[in-house]
Length: 298
Image (cartoon, rainbow, N blue to C red; front, side, top):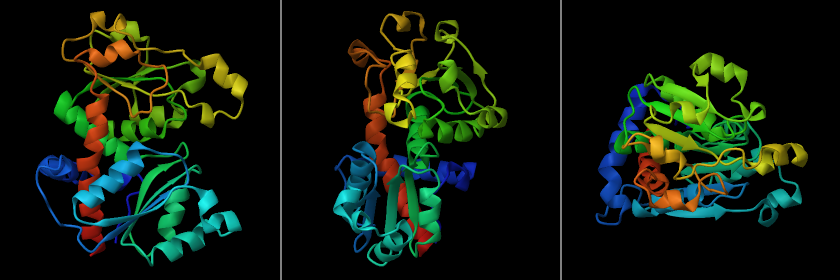
C-alpha cells in the first residue's frame, strides 16, 4: 500500500508516469471510451472542508473507471458531530472502502489519516499544507497547454496560505522552472520554501512579456486569523485583459478555482485563459492517481 500525502512522495519519473497515464485516459474522462479498471472498488470521499471541483472530479474519475463512491461532505452529518475522533473515523471507513480521499482544515490531517488507515489515503488538501493532486493536474495543464521543462511562471496572489502553490513550487523545481512571485508583503511564500525552491519577487508588469504562464490564486479570507488583515490585501492583484496586452502570444493563465475577483470576466474570452480546461484535467489526472494507488495497494 502507498499513500499520496505530499508531492514529495513522488519522484520525477513517478510524476511522468502519472501524467502519461492521464493523457491515455482523456477519452475515458470525456465519456468517449469505457474502461472498467475500478470495477468492484469503492472510493470514500471524506471532505471536512467545502469543495466542488476536487470532490466531484474524484467522484467522476472513479465512476468513469467503473468503481463506486461513498461521500462524507460535512462533519455535522457524521459521527464526528457526536465526538468521534479522526483516527477512529479513518479506521472504520478503511474497512468499508478500497481507497480514501481526505480534505481537512488542519495541516497534517492527511498524514495522520494515513497512519491510521488500512487502505491507501490521498491528500485532497490539508489546511495550508499541500494539495498534491492539484499539483499533478497543474503540471499536466502546463505540459499540454504551454511547456513544463524550463517553464517561466509567475505565481500571483496568496502565496502564504495557498496549499496549491506550496505543492506546485516543489514540483516545478524538478523541471528547472524560473519562478516569479507576485504578491503583497504579508502573503509571500514562507521563507523556508523560498530557500528550498528559489525564485524572485517581482512586479507583474516587469515580467509579463517574458513568462509562459501566470498561476493566479484567490486571496483566501477563511485562512486569515484576523479579518482586518484580509481587508488590507483583498483585491490587491487583478488580472485584466488590459494587463495582457504586453503578454506573449502563447501565455497561459491558470487558476485552481474558485475565482472571486482576481481575474476579470473579459479575460475568460481570451486565448490565454485555460482555467476551465485545467479544471477538466482534474478528471483524467485523478483517474491516473486512483490507478496508481490501487496498483500500489495490490
